[in-house]
Image (tube, rainbow, N blue to C red; front, side, top):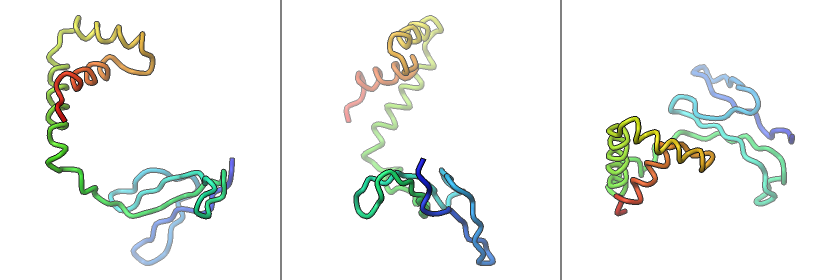
Length: 120
């Protein structure tokens, strides 16, 4: 495994930097996001080398837009429809998951509900 090019850190209120270690991923509160990416040999990134990225948390502008509302409404309706099914109906969907490995019966139901009801 290739070494990292940088150590992630956070800056404390007194200005000191606290090193978090190697291989840090995910989000720290709603201030900083850490990720690891592999170099692909493009734009100065060495092929195969792992890079530790650190950047500021940003709320996406698309989180509550009018274009996404139909999909959110359909998802809400799909979940309500799943919850309204009887156990026998849910078991029917769960039996399909055995034939399609890696996908749960719930996910198959939600996908089919979107295919049948989403106009987006």
